[in-house]
Length: 260
Image (cartoon, rainbow, N blue to C red; front, side, top):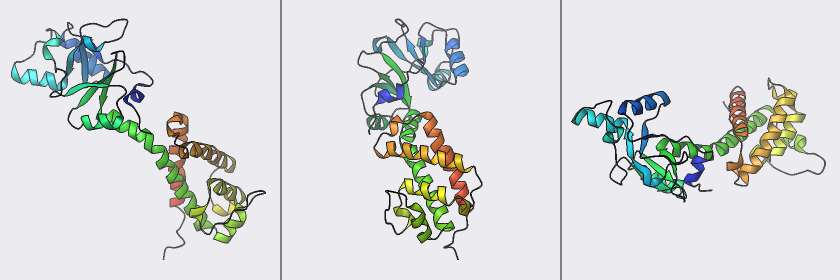
């Protein structure tokens, strides 16, 4: 389940770079237009690719600000005059694309960003703490959303129906499983009970669409529980997130029968 740095660049990202002989103003223009915090400064690109050996360093708002404080800047002078060099004592360094996210996250505790390259020494792009955080969230959020949905389903059922009625409604031909509380129910049993007892739940939604969404979520849940969360599409993640928020809101409006 531990991911590699290469996962951040799948699909490939736009190379955030500029030739070293370009004027500083061109770098500033590109950074402001594209909301970049830094750009790789390179000698040349070969067939649109950047090789590790062609990287001169990096220009960033930090390096520009440092130059302003120390010597002033000439906006028409080459951007290579305003570099942060690539080494362990600078703001960034090189990492291989087959390194784990965990290893690179540790390096980002010292550096502000790193530059990834593949086995052919081709530069893939920058990695920042934001990228690492997003990747971890992409890995964790499906589990979080599924848990949110299950907890809301349990609250709705337990506060709207007695357990004996839930148990009776959960039974179908070929499926007659015993359980003594909603926490021990299977996801398919939630769906069966909701389909049979819809009117008793007071959910203000379209029954067919609601149940259809739950059926789709059951399939997504099966993938997640088999540690295939990385195979979830963006559309499936949106469904988990959107339905999770909706059902959590529905559950919040149902009085808790255990409350005094």
